[in-house]
Structures are given as C-alpha cells and as structure tokens.
Length: 156
Image (cartoon, rainbow, N blue to C red; front, side, top):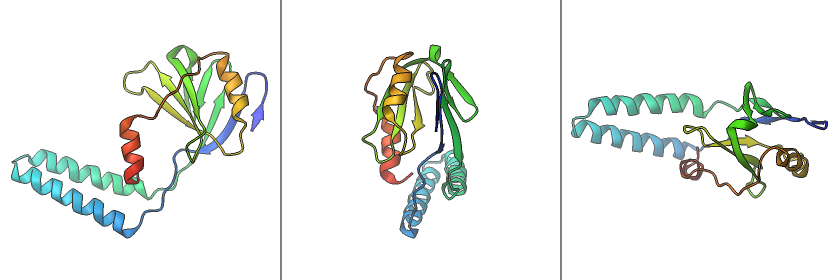
C-alpha cells in the first residue's frame, strides 16, 4: 500500500473465491434441468436455450480463480483496474467493515450500476481511506443490492 496526500493504492482480488462442493453443482444442475423442462412444457424453447447457455457460461466462470486487480483513490476519483470513476459521477460512499471481506460501497449516478463494490485488503487502514474520500464525497450508509445478497447466500 502506498499513501501520499491524494493517493492510496492497493491490490485486491476481484471477488471472493468460494470452494463449492459436488452437492452444490448437483443442485445447480437439477434446478437448471427443472427450469429447462418447465420452459419446454410451456412452449418457450428460446428461454430453455437461454438458460442452458447461461448455466454453461456460469460453469466456465465459477471455477476460475480470482485475479488480483489494482485499485487506487486519487484527487480525481476511484480507479478499479482500468476503469476510473470520477467523483463527479459518484454520490456517496460507505466503508463496510462488518462484512467478512471489507469493502467500499460507492453510490454512483449510473442507472445500470448504482453501487460500485471496491474490495479492501485486510491490512489497510480504513481511516486513511475515509479521510481521503470525505474530501470529495459524503459518507452515507449503503447496503449491497438485494440481488447481490441473494447471490452471496446461495454461494455465488
């Protein structure tokens, strides 16, 4: 971690890797087959094909180990890998230190990505990050979106 008056940067994994048992894969397979059969019964072949392709893509992605990404906070915004989020497009932030893997939740003005989740390493000083962000954004409580909570609950 490097720190100067306007720059904090660190490396973090892009997502939390979870080991999944054979039972988890069987459950996903059974639910997938049930949805495909229901779609075929209701005459919606395109939906059945879409589900099959989606589960195939998921199975390719789910076993991929997470990559380390570079994250930085500077005087112009937040950088996550190669994407800069300027402060002008952000509304507020919240540091979620209660989660098993600490993270910054940033509310964006973008309709399709209202909450940006920025992972924090365990050894970083949250007060340093809070101090830098408070110069540019207000701190407000944010919770992760409902869909994200459901996906965490079922093991994604």
